[in-house]
Length: 116
Image (cartoon, rainbow, N blue to C red; front, side, top):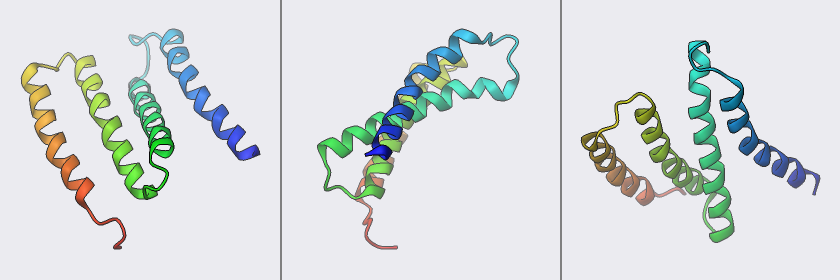
């Protein structure tokens, strides 16, 4: 019971941490390593949301498979956000990412997760 409360508090704090970080910092004066923090937070938030959604919708799914699916679903929009923030996102980049993402997703979903 106490573990669920702690997990819920951590999950909700993620949603507060990203806007708080974005509002309280100036990207022009921020050190270079801290410029990556919002992208990491976006990935962690999306990963957590997809993981919780998969747990609720498919509780019988293996944990390893849930993590891989959540990671793939979180990686795609995060990569798009990173490219857009660098002003490098074009239609061809989007299509290339999509063409890499679809076969990779198909391959990772077909892996037998029971074997080591």
